[in-house]
Amino acid sequence: MTEKTLKLPIYLDYQATTPLDPEVFDAMLPFLTEKFGNPHSVEHSYGWEAEAAVEFARGQVASLIGAIKEEIIFTSGATESNNLAIKGVAFANHPAKNHIITVNTEHECVLGCSRSLENMGFNVSYLEVDRLGMIDIDILQDTITDKTSLVSVMAINNEIGVIQQLEAIGQICKDRGVIFHTDAAQAVGKIRLDVDEMNIDVMSVSGHKLYAPKGIGAIYVRKGTHIIPLFDGGGQERGIRSGTLSPALCVGLGKACNIAGNNMCKNLNYIKKLSQRFFDNLSSELKYLKLNGCVLNRYPGNLNFTLLGVKSNLLVADLRDIAISTGSACSSAKHQPSYVLKAIGLEKMQIEASIRIGISHVTDVDEIDYAANHIIECVKNLS
Ligand SMILES: *Cc1c(COP(=O)(O)O)cnc(C)c1O
Image (cartoon, rainbow, N blue to C red; front, side):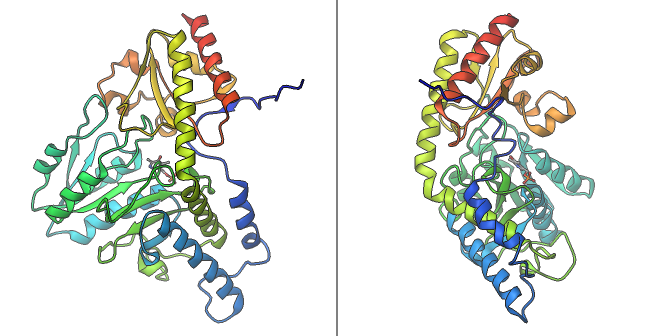
């Protein structure tokens, strides 16, 4: 009997990035070789071919989130989309409105944009989250003033997997005439999102978090929402994002969105099962295990937990057979304790004993069982 050999280290860091889906690669390939036209060339068939592919991809992105094609603008990724959303909306509504609201557990780039705006004289309110990582809807209500142009709240947190109440937030924003932006880099293609049902006006999408390549993303901008572009140039993408598009990358994002939409329920159920199995395996052996973030409003493919008494940097170094992070790729690079875990009330010791496990539909049971046993062994050796 032959046992399937596992490829080590087992990749369980899907919040940092995901592998390119082979089907996505196949769809992209012709646009890197013979179909090399500039999609903005309108005078010959090379251009038309590229343009048609880009427009088809735009429709695929739109359809995943309940938008119309014209509301999708391709960007280089969620960092650019977040910058465009936050600065673009703030600038467009200034000086009549000079206040925006965000949350202190947002991605670095959202917090960075907010700080930049503060330096320019805008007012920013940073909502706090409770111990589960959720914002308080009543406090959001009370924080909105007649000077507020934008509320930016992420869909799924990249460190703890918590899902915010998008529908409720969207309703408040709609009622108060405030633009609602969500950084949905971790959510698009993973959970159902509908820009109309959730009253989302602007949404950021990242390709490499949903099995498309790195360097491509999109921003959804609801019809009628005014955004000041970040770049001056040829006026592509309805003037919101100048620069020649990469048809290959656009096709990749479109295809990835299409695949994700077709498999969403199946994948989510599968990931839920694996996630539960993994956590049960760990909890049966490790009694000082605590899941971080809300249990109910959570994406099951993101498990963040504290192993009390263990130093996670030692543990992560010991866990040679699995590729994981202690937190977000950004804050790990700076070797700073996670501000997200701090925001949900964890002490320094607890933050240092926390790790994040990402589970994907491409993860299999053998991998997840191996990983759980490996963690249990390493923890036992360390304590
Ligand atoms: C990865 C990520 C980003 C940045 O996306 P890029 O496409 O890498 O620029 C922004 N927000 C969240 C929540 C993310 O997970």
